[in-house]
Length: 123
Length: 110
Image (cartoon, rainbow over all chains, first blue to last red; front, side, top):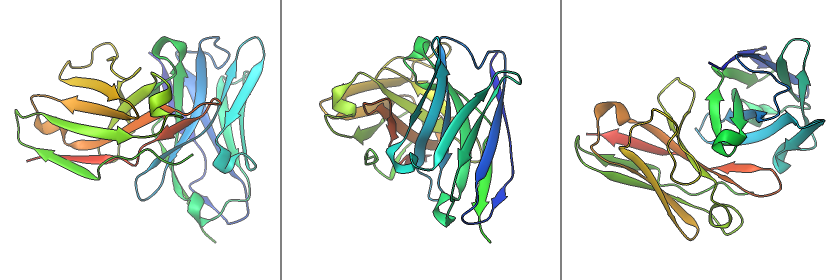
């Protein structure tokens, strides 16, 4: 079955770049029927979809308006993984970050999730 | 986009039924048949419970059902069990290849 394994630092300084990676097993980042997402959960509990990457003859990206100017989600086909980069972070970016798979089989609901990474933005 | 509106908390006794609402707009909940629901236990990742408003992924209990009227979607859990005690989130496609979540509802099984 598909599994996602997240990695990356848990502490980032304000104004720096948050970088996380999500390793995929049981599927391919280049799948023509899947999309690879990042979602975060603030300390107050709310979930926020951040962005995704997916392959349909070429690579596509979609991003939430709230972070569009600061975010990049990229595939790494050589390692079968994808990454999140969030630039110019501030304390309000402190959250648990999840990677998640969605696909056309379930109308792009988020069917598989990574274990989550708590990221704190603090000097 | 603004988050979808859910009640902060609901409660029920074992064996009872409860309903959690999720209110959006015609640009998200009311505009597409693409509401999904997630269950989250403390310290765990969310788990998909329903998609396309009312469909259950393979293997999910039929005690969980979904419906929608206008801009409000609902999750109903029948025959409440202790393990249903968790947070529940709705999510909707919001157009332009973006998704929006609700603020979450804490279900307490008394």
